[in-house]
Image (tube, rainbow, N blue to C red; front, side, top):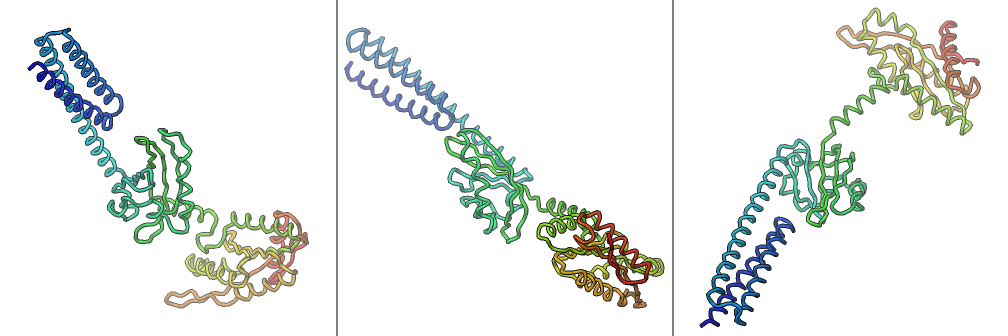
Length: 394
């Protein structure tokens, strides 16, 4: 009878031990190593006491009543251990649910796209802002590679390379970097994106978190500002600032390759009278039409710029001779002396002329300032003499 009770108690002890170990291992997986190991150690410690008690009982060290009493208390300890484990597991599940809910709320409220890729590079999280930016639903995105989903085909290699920087990082350390990359929407529209990428180790596996911002409007605004800084808003021609830069480059190239270069300074004759008589709108029409006519008389490699008011300039790189520069000057003047149709109810017309000064590199000078002065002086010489154009003399 005693032996049967002993075997029954030992069987119960083993069952409780296995339950304790199972709960402990679950705690290790769900809540971290420290809590799990504490529970496991408690289960093993109680089993150790049980084994020692059984040994003493079998060898007469304790009587049956004492053995049964202590064993009951140990059973109670196991029960308390199981209850505590279940309570802690409920707490763990609650914390997990809370963390998931917080992540969902943060993801939904964020104005920037939040994307997380797992250790295989597949999208594991895709928030509402990412859906708005790229047009893909969460169902469309999950399980896909980010570069396959949003990178333009011709830029996918650069896109993938941008994400490889974190692979040399130490496990468990978050590292980040920001890139400006082209993105592709579901409808095929290409956009400009700013992507902040961080690599993190989660449960021993590498994950990539990407914060995406649509910067298309900002980039377009920056491009407009840059264009306004270097181009004339009325005619669309390079302004004085860009003209100086182009002339400086053309002179350096001509000096390096030992080519000639011609600079034409042009002033519209009679423009002020037309502007004062017919108004500024008519004057603006003439300036825009004059810019178009000048451009039509030169090569694509030449530069036509508006320096301000009714003054224009033309850079003719790789010119063969002064005669070629004179030919271009005549073509420009012939184009400008034709009547300008102003439109409006009266279908008014206006006539203007032009005076052009020509400076040649390296004959009239080798520096930009010298050539500008020579061409300007030649232009005034042509205006005063009544000739259409004039060559300068350094």
